Length: 178
Image 1 (cartoon, helix red, strand yellow):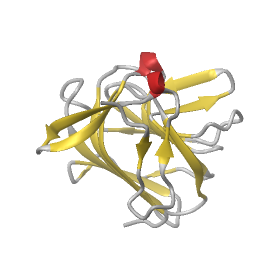
Image 2: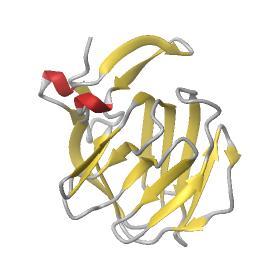
Image 3: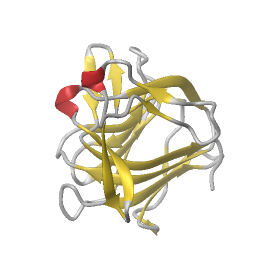
């Protein structure tokens, strides 16, 4: 089946897609017996909701796989002026982009479709750290500015749309550095 709504754990920031052809597919028993949402970039599959604004510390925890060696947004903003996104630049580079700066972090995939756990934190000093399967991948990098996230599976900037291609098993975002 396809997912019309991805319910938030605390019930306040659900993500939804009313257009059936733009809904990600629910695939059962993918990661340790748990379901996943499969996003297909060519179908512009996204789930949108209220804007989450991070001006300071935040943590993003993600379980899934990226299946494309190109720009691929796990989550982003529909703000045409920017607003940032979190996702892949290619198979080797992970990008955290705010409204003022983009920071490239390295978390090489063994192969496209590799499933793993990512944790991205930005502390009160605007230092961004990227962990892959619990291992820090490089020294923390500075990323000042605001990150606006209101779309899962894509982002928009002007006429440019970037969509996610792969599986998202879990996505948690909090406004603190854990």
